[in-house]
Image 1 (tube, rainbow, N blue to C red):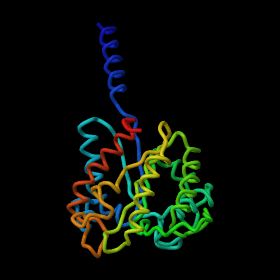
Image 2: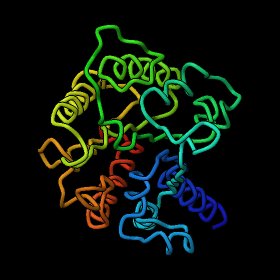
Image 3: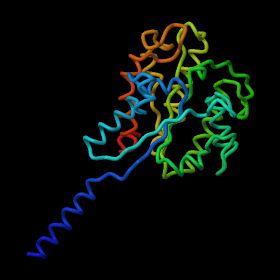
Image 4: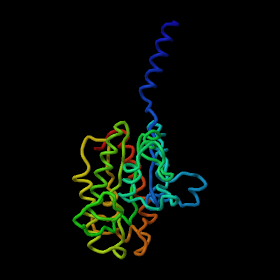
Length: 263
């Protein structure tokens, strides 16, 4: 009888182990647009009390329903001081590639630090990234000028850097965009070209980088942030209704990356 009980105990214990998912943790690096999606329908006051936005709530529900232990945190990156409130292709390149290492750069964590703390790193650019200027014909990877030629060099360097951490995964958003009132048609066309290049040329199958097409949700097939999705024609931040709809889609995409359901 004792042997039977011992065997049953071993079987039950082993079965539980197989059903458990090892804890995976993610960090979402963002500014104000990303923060809006992080909150969803949760207002800032409630978030400060509960520290739970819609993306976190999505994770909690998923964990409860599927017996998983996924965790996600958010962080304003880079912060306003001392680096400056800039999170464009140049800035990620500047911090993660040009000034790589185990020591922070201007108080901002490098990839060497982030990949040691998190399995998945998610990053994005705020809507001024869409104010893309004409190419000069002389691309410069170290330039802060927002142009397609510079963006592409910086993104290629970022991809090479992320490939140095094969045990980690990365999600990058396609660019956030302005309302029609706040950008020119030429800028909007270049932004769509950048989005198309990221998806069709820069992103490759089978690696550790995944692209979430935020641009398509914002524009709904147009060139600009659809006014119904914006705070106002004069404010290119997502409104609460749009954020509420998109937050669970973002959460599900993260889960799908964790569980290797997307490429």
